[in-house]
Length: 453
Image 1 (tube, rainbow, N blue to C red):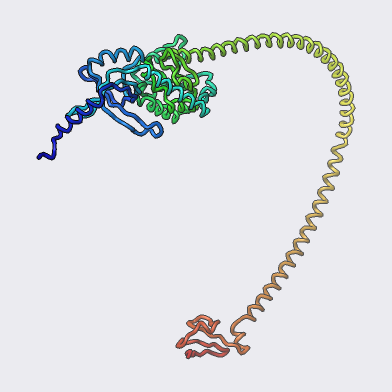
Image 2 (cartoon, rainbow, N blue to C red; image 1 turned 180 degrees about the horizontal axis):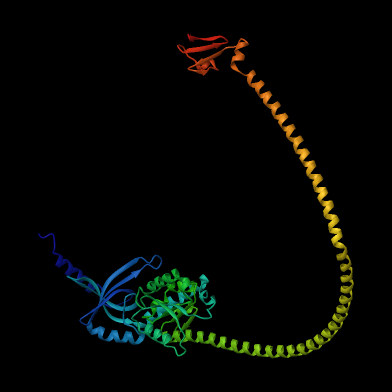
């Protein structure tokens, strides 16, 4: 009795059971995780995520055989404007298949492209509503646009045709306006494009003081090619960016969410360049008009002031002539008065000059006698002061001699005192000696030594 079967037998049994059980096609909704084409066939990895946690809920392999794919692919593109690609949510008709070698898979025999379009629109509406609820959708529009936007941070793909169109238009503008432009490269389509653009915005933020505006440009594309610009995180970053953001993403119909949150949106990269050039032109015209107005005002003011100066000049001339005549008359009177007073003064001074020699002679003699008397008095004072100083000095010397004599050690010894020395030095404190030290004692008529016990 056989109590086991082979793996191939088990797989054949499973295949037979599934074929009997799943006899019809099923319509399912799934997201494309991966898609690869080979020899006309399309091989897909389908997945489903939990709406609350975004965790993987289911996964399956699927295939569109070439016989179906030849019809499905162009039909899907004609409706959506894009090929099937990773990240798309699709409504498909499938049949269940189990192969004894390749295992479980789904055969796709039809796709509803309108569902994919509707899913994109539903997701788009949800994002716009969330941005409105967050109160950020118009934040970037509220930033003041610079008068002269010449320092431009551009986010685009370096090899994109749209970036080339933008640079050609702005660098070769007919007015010769100069712009300082720096490219921050980013992906412009695909499932990671939004994160690449956000990274570029972060890089610009680090150099914020070097730019006036941010421009995001790319060429045209299908709704799916541009779906990365319908991303909440990207829209949030654009809305909250501290510089005005201009989008020229190359679509001709509906605006992307990035367009809605940007400060200004234009249809193409070329239009973005034209818009910036027009802003410089507006300021240029404003400056020229200001110069014209200023020139007219200066001319009018100059004419008015010149007329006023001429009137004032004539009036001043008349007043000056009157004043000069009046001052000439007064000067004439003053001159006569000065002449008369000068003659009187000269007569008086002449009289005094005639008397002055005799006065000087008498004054000099008196001065000489006075000086002689003063010198005699000073001589007497010096003599008396010298005698007094010498007498005081002699008295001080005598006092010092008496003091020295009184402090002579020999005289002190005569009074019955003695002096004790240790090693030739005067001993003043008993604590300075120790047992065995030899000390010397001096009295009036001699000295002797003692040993400390």
